Length: 147
Picture (cartoon, helix red, strand yellow):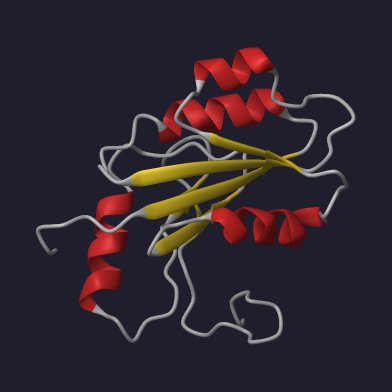
């Protein structure tokens, strides 16, 4: 990896599930990667919006409140509009992150500028069972793996 660390924007969506979002943020703030911006988009939650107390606890996090529920894609697009990273990482708010998961992904992306996206191996909460481990082909219509 180069000696500099490109900015990575982590973006997640909150909708009613503030507890999950807080757990996600706690894990994100323990990441060892040194150049992050973290963006939480609240998708107009009728309950479970990030409170002033939550925003105070996570002062380095950028909170955006949408005036309507834009769905997963629309909420991420709202976050992407303000994200400043060289790389964008879209995560579900119920994701818990291993502290050192990001370095190999950024290193891979830096070493392979022809690659458009990468994904980490995703484990179930037991920390052992693989839920998702990537794909060779990505559908241009859905952005999901071809099977």
